[in-house]
Length: 116
Image (cartoon, rainbow, N blue to C red; front, side, top):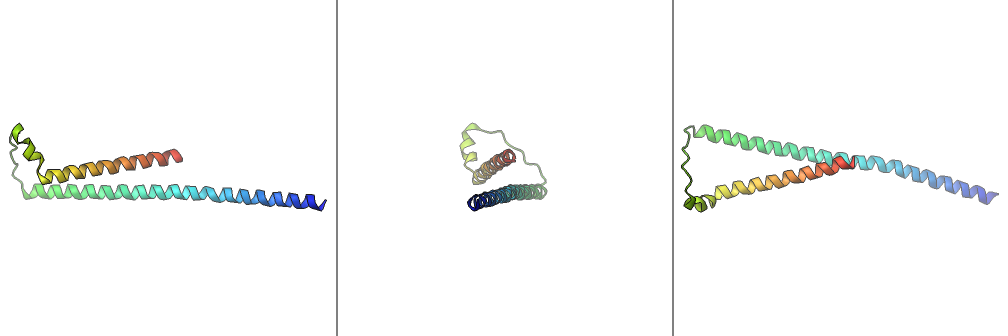
């Protein structure tokens, strides 16, 4: 009889520990998701700030040079020299990097929404 009683006590303790672990694990996963969402929000805010700064710089450049510049017709033979302009290359690189980062954020956001 004592053996049976000890067996049930052990089973009850194991069940309680299992339930406690299950309840403790739920807030941890919610906390992880919340921290991921928080990081995404801060990344988005940072990107918005960068875009705002770039817009501000463009407005300052426009004010510094108020005379509209006449854009000449593109001569196909000069296309290679125009495309090799370092400023153009830097701008293209920045656009590609920004696109990749946005794609990464969108993928992470979809993952987070699916895990909810």
